[in-house]
Image (cartoon, rainbow, N blue to C red; front, side, top):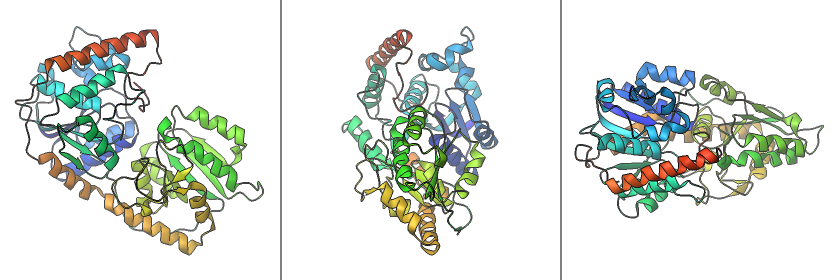
Amino acid sequence: MDYDYLFIYNDLRLGGIQTQLLGVAKELRKKEKKVAILLHEEVYDNELYQQLRAISDVFFWPAFRPNSLPKFLFCGKYLLPSLIYFRVDKIRKEIGSAKHVVGLSSIALFHCMILSDKGVFTNAKISTIAYHSLEFHIEKSDSFFIGKLLNFIKNNSDGIKFIATSQDTKEKIGNLLSGKNRDIDLIRCGIPVEGSFKPKLKNKPLRVLFIGRLVNFKSYCLKFLQVVKALNSDPENPQLTYRIVGSGPLLDDIKSEILRLKIGDWVQLMPEQPYSSIGRLIDDSDCFFGSGTVLIEAAARSCPAIVGIESNPQVTTYGFLSDIDGVSIHEPNLKYVVRPIYNVVNSLVEMSNLQYNKLRKENFRKAEEFSWPTVVDSLEVALEERRVNSKIYRCNRRDLANVYVALFFSLTIKIFNPNYKISKSYQVSE
């Protein structure tokens, strides 16, 4: 099969990047493009998987292991070394060729580079789309392996197209590349904008919703509990309820804080829900508080969307999505007006239904700027720009050897310390 686009990513768990992948694939299918997805792990949300299978060909990396190796060596903690030891002939037979090979994480980009270096994809343009601001940024908490991996990407980035979904992410990529490759495009995240503006009456108490992975950089979820406590100071006249949908390492801290603040009557914790239920949960709420693509999806359903600032030590926000003027939305230290979350939510509680529906319309109009047709048109233009292709792409052997050594070293540490994080620190699992 000759594909127009091959996207490579870690898994198909329910998350922002995975829903972006589904949206891009759907829009490309409308344009009659042939799309393939290569996932590192055979881990997926069944609904997302079935939707992707209907519009693209989905492959799992363990299928390309050498026959002499058992399947368990191509998943879990053994996944990373498996990316450098695989059957080239089987990939060529099953996937064939692709015009564009696009990695959706730093490890996925490394995988694109290895596949191209080994001649799996000739004449393919290599690209990466960075959806997370820390994806190409070295943190103190990152493993030795990640440091060497990003150094490898920096030194071997000639001809590779970098695309960021926020100004902060673009700047971090530029800092990593240090002038070697300043050709970094900026595009918006996309969302489905269907139907028209939906007016409604507020509930009393106000219903606030969060949906997403409870990872540490979303500490705003934890801080919002203070707002719940403050606005419900009179137990006989509560002003809002807070529904948290998701799971992750922050969940235990949230449970402890709910007990400490004694607000269990007004906070509902729900596990991850099927993708199809997201719209219903949003429509049942009066306000969404969070970050990522689901924030924009909420606004697209006319739900006022309050921006949760990621990695923010303060109980503050940039306000509603309709207050944002730019591509970047939830990164810290953006040049937007910062307001206490309490003030923003309290204004929502106090406003009339006429004012509330005016706000709903403003958020809906803002979300229209992120519609899939507009976003994918911009993405195709960025991916088509002429640059070196994989026919002449070769990795520096010393840089590659350094990545292998760092991976072996990190895996050795993990044997003695199972909690040691080899991949990026913000990722939920390895």
